[in-house]
Amino acid sequence: MSFVRFLARPMLASSFVLAGMDKLKNADDTATQLSPLLRRAAESLPFQTNEKVLARVIGGTQVGAGVCLALGKASRLAATVLAVISALNGYVEWRSADISSKEGRDARRKQLLKNVSLTGGVLLASVDTAGKPSLAWRAEHLAADARKTTAHLAADARKTTGKKLKKADKAVRKAVDHAVGA
Image (cartoon, rainbow, N blue to C red):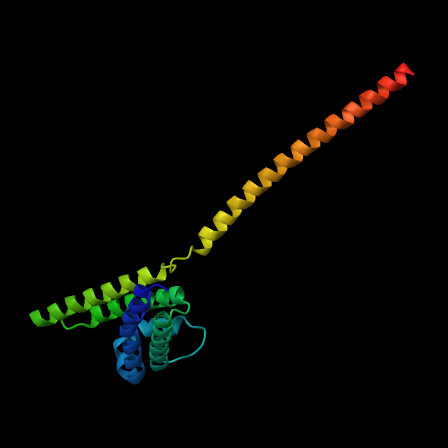
């Protein structure tokens, strides 16, 4: 891992870990703030749950994914999860912000920019391969190498078979000539 990744991942993850811990501590407030979104989520689940439990699940997921990102363990998956959570959080905060005053509108804009920036950061982290090629790239190049190897083997087989056929043809002609001349 490069020095930049060593520093950047924990720095980016720290905001998510702290926000997730806050969601866990204040599950009632989180459930109230996320109520419209959580209600829809609870309706789509095949089992009964309440908004407070879902708020805790979101907070725990945010802490877990943040820690994984900070430690560089399954960091692409963790960053993807954090991007989704960050986008949802930005939407909820945008909708629930107080816009009755100029200060409220300014705070709403700053909060939105913060959430967009964090979402962009974790989106970049979600596609970061840490200097290693992605699985798709490796599979593509492995297939190309296999095609080249197969083509070389087929060419060698044709060449060898051609030589053997010529040798066999010479032997047959020689035997026929010998039989005819005898």
